[in-house]
Every structure is written in C-alpha cells, then in structure tokens.
Image (cartoon, rainbow, N blue to C red; front, side, top):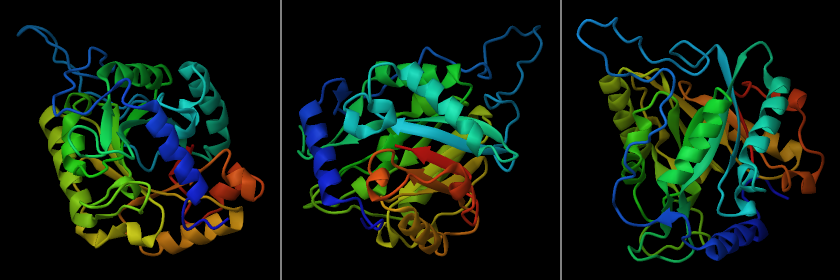
Amino acid sequence: MSVRGKSPSRRTMLMGSIAAAGLAGCTTDGGSTGASSARGSGAPSASSATATPTPRPTLPTGGRTIFPAHRLFGYSGSPASPALGRLGVGNDLNARVDEMLRQSTDFAAGRKILPVVELIATLVHPKPGADGMYRSRVERSVVDTYLAAARRAKGILLLNIQPGRAEFIDEVRYFESYLTQPDVGVALDPEWSVKEGQVPGRVFGSTTGAALDECARYLSGLVTKHDLPEKVMLYHQLHLSIVSQETDLKQHPGIALVKSIDGIGSPADKKKAYDMIVAQTPSYVRKGFKLFFEEDARSGPLMTAEQVLALSPQPEYVLYE
C-alpha cells in the first residue's frame, strides 16, 4: 500500500463512520464554546493586592519551553467513532491514556516525554450541514473530558481541526477559551480543508503557508497576552501537494511549530515519504511522525520505536492513530 495517501477504502470507512455518527455531541453554529471550568495547575488565579504574586504559568512538566528538552508522544481520536483513532476506540478514555503513557517510555531516548492527547475537535463531514461548511464542532463537555484526561497524565491537549470548507483561523478562534490555557494547543489537518465546490473525502484538501501563519500569529498573540508557556501549533502533512508556499509560515514568539508527517504503508514506504517531505520543510519547523495501529500493520510489521527514532532527523513528536 502506498504511503503517499490514505487508501480509498480507509477514507471511505472514515467518512462513512463520520456520517453514521451524525452531529451527536457536536455543534455547527458559530457560537462560542465558553470558558472551561477546568484550569491547569499553572493557570493564573485571582489574588488580592497584598498577596504574593501568582507564579507564571508553566507546562505540565514544569518550565516554559517545549524543545529541545521534551519529546511529544501522543494518541489521537474522537468519541464520535472507532474509525477516528486510538482515543476513539472503546469507552474508557483514561485506560487508553494509561496505555499511551506505558508505550511512551520506549520513545524517550534521553528526553523528557510530554504526553499529548490529540482530540479531533472540529470534525469533517461528507454532507454540508446547516451552514454548508461540511464540519461540526464537538461540545464543550467533550473538550473538558479530554482535557481532564490530558491533565491527569501531566500532558497537553491538542485540538485537531478538520475544517471542511471553513477557514482554519475561524475554527481555531472558536476554541479561544481553551487556547488561553497553558496546556492546550492546536493540530491543523489540511487533508480535510477543501474549497468551494469540493467535498471532503472525494478530494484531498490542501492549505497554504499563509493560512498556517495566520493561525500561528493569532496563537502567539494569546501566548503574549496571557503570559503563557510555549504553545504547540502542529500541522499534519500527507504528501507534498497538501501544503503549498510553506515558507510563508514564519516563526512567532511562544509558538513551537511542528509538522506531523502522515501516511499509511510499510516501514520502507513511510521512511521514503518522511525523507521526501522533510526535505521540503522549513528548518524551524520541528518534525513529527504518525503511525497507524491497524492500517500500517496491513502493509507489514508496525514500525518499532528503534526504527522510528532512527529516522533522520529524529522525530520530536510521535503520534499513533
């Protein structure tokens, strides 16, 4: 199976599962999620004029910068369907996170592991919905549940955005009340970003460096305004055509840019795709690598931790779906 794209059967299965899930537990309107009641231990709190100044918010593992001390390791998913990743399988989210933590130790390689729970928060659909955007957003209660699981693991939550016909920046802004917290970032999925007249699942989506940069600038502004620790802005890339004019994405204060290199296939095919996409990735973007428990295994043995860490450059984010 070629690693250059998800197989039509998997894409059909995914879109079918999304359609079956419907919009239960999701919203398609343009309203705000509201502020989460769950706050990280490093979040600012009110204090009186005579109280000791509140310490600056930190990452769950301490400190305010992610790299080079940490390696990110995570699972992705959504409660909408088992086809949507490891965290979408079964009903015991905490058990899956515990499994993730056990597996993460194989990938430390001299770094401190920062666990990642990647929740598909804006979910693409094969039908337009009331607003014609081919996407829905999970309810605040779902985000709260996944954020609580990430905090229990002393990790971070990444809100995965599959925008359909919506703009990335609009979907990111929708979750601002979460993104003002020190342990929440975003994961943009341009494979599911389509233009007017296109339908997700029938074509591969795409984005531009300028669209990614708009999100990075916005997140950097939140980091500065709220004195937050470094925040992850990740984007997935399946093949070269999915991100164009990538150098329009610039570095911004307080933002750790990461690219997760996607694709299904044998270890040899996945390595080939990794090398090809890395060669055209800006040097200031950290490199990540995604594996699929079921789909990759159909093309041969799932890559081991040793094989993943032998990639050059060594991935600084390892994600399983």
